[in-house]
Length: 356
Ligand code: NAI
Ligand code: MG
Image 1 (cartoon, rainbow, N blue to C red):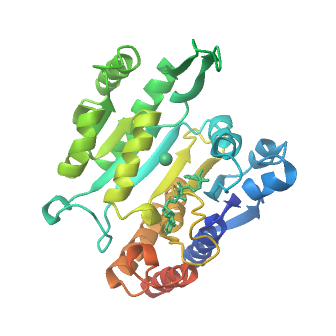
Image 2: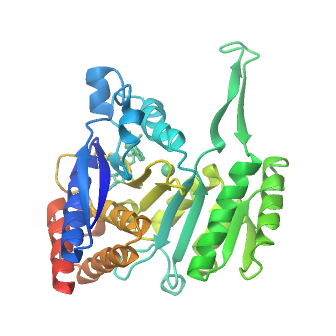
């Protein structure tokens, strides 16, 4: 029997509420399947921890997480703690220290999920965004000169290394081969005359290693438009850190909203643990009311099964989510229903049992 050690960081706000449902579902799916088992270890880190201890995680937090197979994270963020602290000292720290250079965001419109597009454009919204997750515009490189003076200057530098650019593009091609799909690169070489010219050149080079894969290349502004007007042209999509951040929010809106958007931060070499999370935040406006939608957290659990090589279980979770959306009887208020977070989790569990 495979045993996977998962570090759980529920975090703040609705984080713990949705993670509890995700774990409920993971346990049940593993139990029904019988080939594998999870060992969960909880870490109380986040903004509430920060308010008590003056730090987002334990000093040796990274060391403590290192031996796990995966990290399952809710959300961090709390009124009173600046967002750049919660982001840089926990989330980005884990992503960087564990070299989770691939951010995978599935953008798939499931049957029954709400979509803001007119009917004829809703077909085939099924994209896999591969976002560069370790450098680029979010490298944190720059300077702030003459602070507060009239001649004040700030520099924010994009960092695109050959290694970093090649590996993310190659990862996208490997996924495209596995899925039998095309790859679209999104950049902006007309305006960003160093970084994105380089990006396009590397894309061109790597594509030569995969002559069987159909490729497309768009400027980011045009891509934003095509995602709305003709989303079916996108299959596997590879793009930089900033562009990926923005475009996947468009994607989240297309595929049912924040309550349904999942993301995985992957270290493909498995030298370090990878991290799975719903992409929404801690939603202080609805926290502690038991009405947060747990489906994004459950979708990220499905990504974890895929990552561990149990794609069939991952698929069964997605099928269960889709079924619940189609039934429309047990849905949280963001999707127009009046069910609680745990009622939705229970319905998914029931669905898995019935299917088994
Ligand atoms: P948010 O994603 O927390 O909320 C945006 C809106 O979507 C809110 O109206 C919220 O109620 C709704 N929403 C989000 N998730 C939902 C769910 N599962 N079910 C139902 N409704 C849901 O983003 P916001 O308000 O900008 O940020 C709140 C805090 O979260 C901030 O402190 C921010 O820094 C942090 N944050 C953390 C992230 C993370 O940990 N990965 C990501 C984004 C924001
Ligand atoms: Mg974002």
